[in-house]
Length: 349
Figure 1 (cartoon, rainbow, N blue to C red):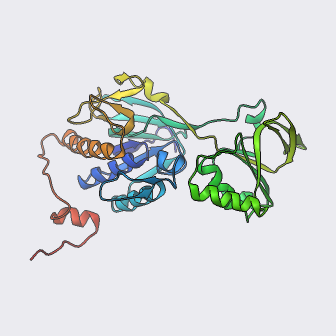
Figure 2 (cartoon, one colour):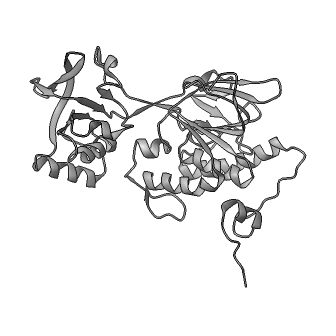
Figure 3 (cartoon, rainbow, N blue to C red):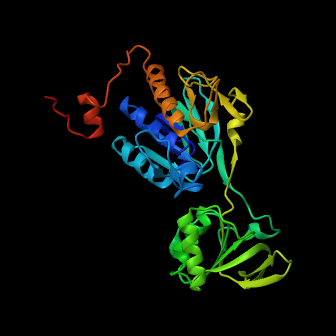
């Protein structure tokens, strides 16, 4: 997209985690269409990246669900409002224009001209924790990967997977029957993943379908512009050379406030200060919801973020149309909301 052709929007949401997704819903109920930008390649934020299969017990009226299930249900819930997602890119600049709108630029050279902005970036933009090995960066995207965007490219290949969390084990299990070989590498024989995944991994190790190496990658070899071997050092300092075609690294994500720190917002200890009436920042028209904000009594809970998103949406509706009274309507009884949601209005007897 050309830099001189920004996308015009009533609302831009920065962050596609659970709170950012629910912000889409609350804005949609008020007839405000949203564009959603996230640095990660898929929606879901921490729920997908850190604990996709771990149970969550504190979502109201949902006794238990996984991070993946919560994300999938939120995506279904907001589908009637047709939000536009712009994933795999970070908002790098935000500038207030003379007409009061905000010009946002992303790392993928997209621009948005928004009337309101909602920062739902969790604890900041997530970046993968890197394997600190000299020369390894040159192979990222060729033989070394921190995200799996196209699983097909690893079918039939010799794969090494570094990490001991859900992502590492999930992909090890996925490729166990699809790749020439799968070697899981972790610095200790203790894994922070769903118990079911750990059990399955050990069963596949016993069956010879996954190789487990307790140690760390400390070097690599190349030949003819190809990554060919990894040097794995075990806890005794012994080195094993492992033939590979690809290395997948899942060391978790490191939150960074990033460019948000330069947007002239009132920030306290890397969190954005908001009021508790509108969840507005120090700049009118910009709101912050979820773990990224701070106020007296703040609790970093998903359900708290849902509450914040609702109040921020009503505040934005008033900001966008100051002369128009905002009527509180209920999804149980409002024909207008039923139409927006694509459901039939119930008949009460």
